[in-house]
Image 1: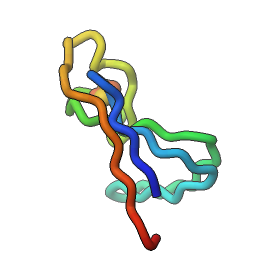
Image 2: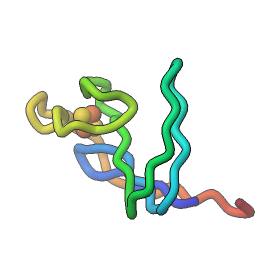
Image 3: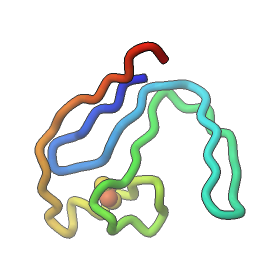
Image 4: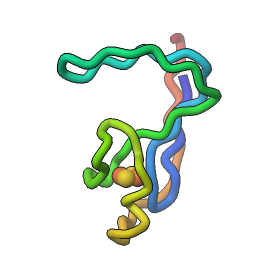
Length: 69
Ligand code: FES
């Protein structure tokens, strides 16, 4: 698994099929990539809705790779 920390933005996961469980909500999403909020301001958590731009969120970019997955 590889996570990309977008500079001043969300965490992106490359994938295809994601099973998401949040509270009572569970869904399967088939997308080439998923963006997760890390600014804390999204109205659609855990997903990024672009609010990070409006609030001026700042954080460095980077990558996290999980080995042996
Ligand atoms: S990172 Fe995009 S809304 Fe939080």
